[in-house]
Length: 317
Length: 305
Image (tube, rainbow over all chains, first blue to last red; front, side):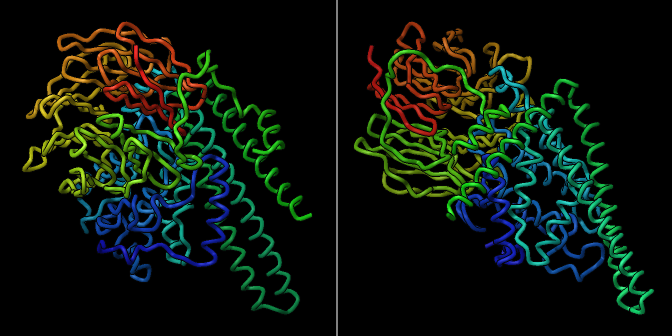
């Protein structure tokens, strides 16, 4: 039993079950699994590294000087990485060891970054963590690609995600944990689907452009809903319900702010993703190929979902 | 997959066909073993046709099975996430797994261990008695001399990674080192340090052999054979190979994509139709010629020429 195992134990409740059942279904369409490797925490496949070393992860202890976010070290790089390492990479076929390389390179890089850290509290900094991931992906691909190329296949070249999306994962997912939601499958799914190191540079780019578009769209919806809330609030003030109106205006403004933030993350992600993909050798042909491959996969998954839904409906009669 | 999904998948071009499998009647029979949907056997090792070990990746974990000459039996995982086994003798078997864990089997009991201060997942192992070498998909290997673990991280491994090991003894453990646009290099552990030798073009993905003068190195499109002095290329008739195994100088098999299996008869590699199109990525050949190959299922035949 590690010193932080109890603190970082995954949550078990109805909302988590509902959320993760959906995630597991979607992952299944892509050939992945949403289950934790080897069962529960401490099980046969468990990697305790990020729990055992949570003390020096960014954010652990007293996040942003706000002790109210403790005692789970939330948000911190420990929880997100613990969920990530124990949930990702479920495709059985990894003959070139790229997932193995990423997992091991990360632990090696983060230990080195911690040893070299100049942070006053002895933690790794956020950028230490981010750069450890970027290097882990690149080095694992460098090591695994000769075999892929020798088989006549396209090299793996999916660069690590942008810093804004990574920050969302590092700080946002653990915040959900703090609110009682088990984010393991969600964390694993986001990496399996959008940050698979075995993807080609074009496929990885296309997937993340889809994610960026989704973030922009969701942000737009949030902003629209916020605008409606503000409108309703003004209406209530004019019709003699000032307190209700002010509350609605406040909530609407918050929603618009969050929406704008999400749209900003999406726009930044799309631009950053494209620049890094080009830097990693992506040409027009790779991008087009990625769009075709990913578009086909999404259509295929949509077809499977429609088929499953149809099967469910017909089975009722 | 039901008909609607299959139709839509075909329309959007997601269900691309694979290359045709080798022609001719299947020379392999399916071994009665059910690993469950989604399982992939990725490791076979053994010491004879009645002592074969298998490791497989299944959804959410990994399993170990043992063939005792009569049937396959599930073994309680001796390490966390068992990744690779090495059988030097029926009473001398090593296993490695996640987070630096390893175990030794003495014919009756598994004794677990942990490489001190190594949290890395171990991906391959070779052991003879109390001498062990383990790989961790990185630019380093871990060696145990019977008393303590040592990390070997010479500059020659910088920028590369060690995935696969094979050895004829504790002082002759080989590992392929690959770099893009450079010849395959073999790192050889002599019991104290590593020496390096270039082999040829390609990427070394697996080693096999029967002794220090009969070693095979598999690259996806070809093989190289070491006779104790020099490496010589031995072309194969099938591309995209993943694994190789040897039971005797004239009995070896290599397997790969689309159900490909090629067998070595002492003079050349030739196709051996398997009747499947699945990816095969593990193989074992016993000294008596009994051979197993595996992907999602396990296949068996006898190699006698």
